[in-house]
Amino acid sequence: MDKRITESQILGELGETVVKKIVLENGFIYEPRGRLEAGTDGLIELRDRKTGSPLGKWLGVQVKSTADGRYTRETDDHFEYLLRPQDLQNWRQSNIPVIIVVWRKSDNSAYWKDVTDSVSGEDRRLLFSKKEDVFDAVCGDRLGALTVDRRTPGVFLPPLNGGEGAIINMLRIRLPDEIFISTSPFGSGRDALPELLEQDDVTLDWVIRKHRFISFSDPRSTGVRAIIDQDQVEAVETTLLADSEDQDDLNDMIHLLRRTLERQLSQDLAYSKHEGFFYFKAFAPNAARRYQYVSTSKKTAAGVVSVYPGKGGAGSKAYVRHHAAAFRFERLADEWFVVIDPTFFFTSDGFSPHRYPGALLAGKKRLERNAAVRGQVVMWQYLLVGGGKQEDGLLFAMSKERPVLAFETLPIIDLPSAVPEASWMRTDPRADQMVSMDLLERLMSA
Image (cartoon, rainbow, N blue to C red; front, side):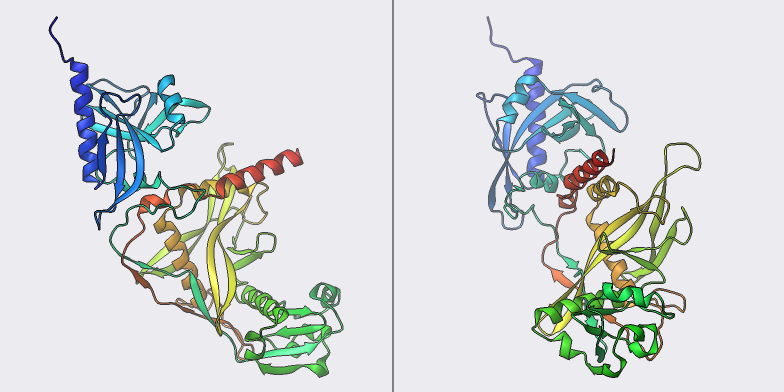
């Protein structure tokens, strides 16, 4: 009987040829396995597209070709693909990531998926997105991200694009020239609070530790005078405390900066002691709020308080999301800086903290991209620096007698390479932990 090449074999070769072409267009190397393959048609080796050097990072590829017809449960947005049990068993033993590429000849469409990215509860079923999972000449960064060994940070950096400007999430702090120091009959701020509650015109921008009181405000001008020894108040140079090498002085300075900033921002931001960050206040129950700022010389606005409707019908509310940030104060050399770490705070109505914020925060972190994080940093920098200061706006003007913290932006760093957007698409490593903690809290309160 004469040897024959079937149409199925031709179709398979066509599919693998298309995949090889796309891999090469991404600047990577494709090596076919040949006739001895068993579940993996080829190998992709990553390559530095600037230097041309192979990186020694590999991906396995299985190509599934079809002439025409529709995939399982195919719509305009997605479809499903059911893996063979034998293939799945083989791929699970692999010591490198394995992807599957489905190619359809009739419309020359190609989509890819990590074989471990199965539908929850169904290991063999993959859900393809026709928007996110296109296998084309620009998917290389996402492919490279699969080779990152998360147990060993920094093992692989996905191929980098052209340069970009890096915004440093730090601001330089301009401290007031004077700081007020006094002794106190109270050993700590907690001990002093009962006495303070009986006074009028009270502020909380001070620190008491081991009977020592410090503040950037003169305590004799407010109700705070009740918790100090007034005849011991002394105005000294701020550098006396700010530059000290004593650990207690350093800790007191950090607490004082946070409390002073809390007062400065009190008209528009609230501070969550439990979470350790500031968040935008809601001005009314279940009411959204926007904040206008300047980003890259253009005016823009952010929804800093967003209301998300519930599933219980019209008027029901599931939760309210607030833009938030943790401010960490650091001394570098002889200067003080604030490090900005954007995050989110969740309430049930704009005021009452949400009972289970962990899963909500984890879901938001999964969707964050470079542009979103960059925009949040720019917004917080604009707020702190007070670039758009208004009479009734953020960083409200304070009396001339009271020193106020000021902030300076640091220069933008021009990077020779840019972090690819796809590398921001991976789940925040804290996401699963946040969901687990949330679930644990629910079980404990049940």
